[in-house]
Image: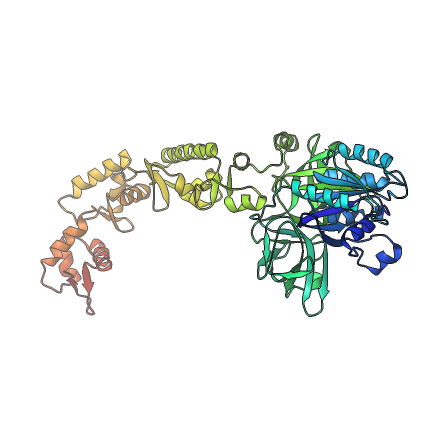
Length: 584
């Protein structure tokens, strides 16, 4: 299917032309028929000489209904511009053309109507000259009469040629169906219509309603007046939604492939039209079928930041237009550069941001996004419209390669600094490193650790972290020299201090396995446990605490926690009468 939107001044014969081409009545509402003008959007379709189908979105031409017109044109890839031969180029012709240009519509056709009432030549020449200055460029022109039918075969052939020029639809892209009408059908429930510009829709699909947390499900699909199990872009579709109240959605809402779009109320855009500095503080942003008030903050000569009155599902590269409804003026077209821009809280931030935006062209660029954002989840980029074809550094985290190398270097420096400042600690805590490196996820620290560093017990240190600082190592040597022949005698607290073993030094020695802590200020040499088991195994079984203390030649201060530690490790077992046996 080929979808085209009409455009042109009020009462220049757009609906009459669509009716003559299709045999269908595009003006669906009684008020439109009574007044003889299109107020809302109309839809009709016909078969072309090639056998293909063209569907028309017939838009209103009256200046009061320009927002309705923009809702119909927004999602459509091509336009049929209608100018009456007897009136020629008119104000709404110009505003509709400005809207098409702002939206970047590049495919079109000129139909000069009422050729039976006046010479179409002057109107054709003026219209083609105006159109040639826009994104549409040079377009074919056909003079027609909806009343007599003259020129209709030529117009059908021209539509066929236009259809052949359109790029192939992106059938594998996610769905973003901008809703242009919603209504209730008795027995079916809520139905919405729109132009499916990309992707596929199937009965049973689960979709996301933009701005809502709850999913919606496709109960039925209609296209060209027939029920269908599937609809593929580009197509006019009516979607019957299961269990969705009519008041939950309307024009300007969107049905989306779940998880594929970023809902944002803040965007940075490039403006083509009025100078950014001349824009008023508030305008209306038209994108898809949505019309949303925005606050405007100029950044550069042609770049602005827009604060939307409500979030929209926007992607990098989206085309939209800014309009001043009070002046009935199209301020210009915009191209979305960033749907998740950084805050501008610091002095000079706006100027710096303008420099960044000056380098962007609105085309999704993975390398550029990574360079600017440094670290970001792959899913977040996909929801911005940026294709992801790089391997994550951890989980689904992507990193700019240069920034990732700098982080690795910084991690090594931070660990070395921590070791100098805290020589008795076995390394730097992972969470402290995460904060120092300003990383959003602990897993990023873990994958940055490379030999000779390692992670042990939640800390990052050198692989030789068990090596004791020299003062502690000397103190342990003194303990071994003094108590080596009395392995079950523990130095008293004051003697530990004399030996150079305060609480921090003892902690370092215990972590390194150079001392064995039985209790506060009760430490032995690390091989004391195995020696104790050998001594106790030589006693008559079971044995008492007193017998163990005498066999080990130690004090109750040491014997009690030593036996309790052996119990916990399963080397000994305590019996109901408090005696013990060695477990072999």
